[in-house]
Length: 298
Ligand SMILES: Nc1nc2c(ncn2[C@@H]2O[C@H](COP(=O)(O)OP(=O)(O)OP(=O)(O)O)[C@@H](O)[C@H]2O)c(=O)[nH]1
Ligand SMILES: [Mg+2]
Image 1 (cartoon, rainbow, N blue to C red):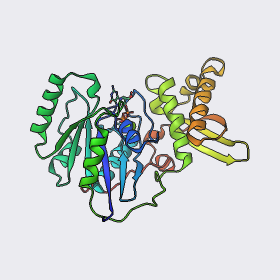
Image 2: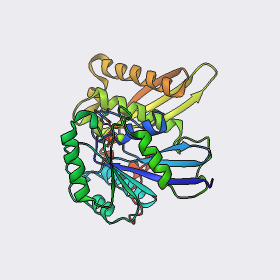
Image 3: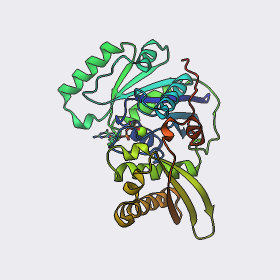
């Protein structure tokens, strides 16, 4: 049997379950998941390998209207993963209305296979689901529609079978033992950011970026020094909390998750630094690994 391989882009509005879906398909917790919007800020690749095929999934940030340069970089990440897609998975959830923004227009115009995944079907009844399917069929008549629950792994086997069928014949893009294109440092910083989203409210988690300053492995453990960058001096007190209690709780929760992810004991040191208005600072965004100028063609 000829080998099949391709890029499958997972797209949709914030919080619809894109990262939950990719993790469930790969069988590993790669992307951060939280109940809050804008959890994912980068394109994250997750690779599903088999003897006869290789599926390269791209988890992307939720589609949004940019307010900061950071958001522009997030939109660029969506754009670039649309540009090299072989198949598009458009994830939505019940009751969500898509406005005709640029990305949706590109999906409507594309000749690539599009599968609309109505996620979170565990939250609705059959009648509501039928109405959802009808609405989507009207909006994107060429697309296939599949109701799923990423959280409960419903219909994911069906999805996988369909994807393998649609994949083009192609040699593998990555080594067959690779799971992602990102390194351990990246995932460690994402785990810390995920815990920040869970532990702090309102604007604070959205003003934060995490960078790994040092990552040293010795025999017994991995020593990690991470910097939490905040946009304003006044946010420091919030991150630290009364008598440092908040950052301590954050540190413990992050360390436990990092240990689970790396399968090693970890010593985690967290520092807080101000990087004034970094969300608007192109140089700083670049240093944090964001790219503002992606190819926009589909
Ligand atoms: N009930 C239910 N909840 C789900 C399902 N899939 C995801 N969720 C929840 O939806 C929330 C958002 O999930 P994420 O995977 O972080 O969503 P996302 O689309 O990646 O979000 P962004 O990265 O912010 O764009 C989390 O609380 C998930 O547990 C599902 O099938 N059913
Ligand atoms: Mg996500």
